[in-house]
Length: 235
Image (tube, rainbow, N blue to C red; front, side, top):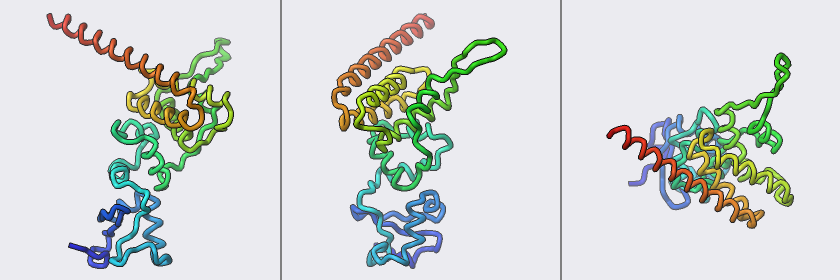
């Protein structure tokens, strides 16, 4: 049955996706997503904003699966939650592109120096005359996700091989630091890096895959070791 927007409560509106799928959303859901809020607020000024049934027309490139995930999970308290919550069967790059297009990623892209300072920053203590490494796990995880988003946005010089090497070094750090980064963060950063290098420096793909293979073997050995310890403890 076709339902027209004018027959719904004022707090509900219907949106049509490029596939023909229609979705009814409340004002609260709409206001969570800047793209939807802008579409609704300006629809009266653009004839193409609605179809002949009064449904708001969603951009055809917006995927319903990605949209539903975003609708259910946003807003996130921390940037790191984007990757922690994103299931591993979702296309990482596509998910971020969708979030960006929908107006949900309003943070700035970090410079490579900012990434470096966050990952490997040291502080000087004048009382002890010593330098100490500054490790703040939550900040590291947020920075890892911001860095990955910046790669998708092509925020760094894609023509400079030195920049690519630097990016690879940071990716290697994230993938290898099991105690600092959530498994989902490491997984999605790897996917983003693979996408990035496939476009701008394919020579680094082999190194990246070799690194991933080593890390997978390391994780498998750790699982076996943990299982052995568990069995011994229960003998």
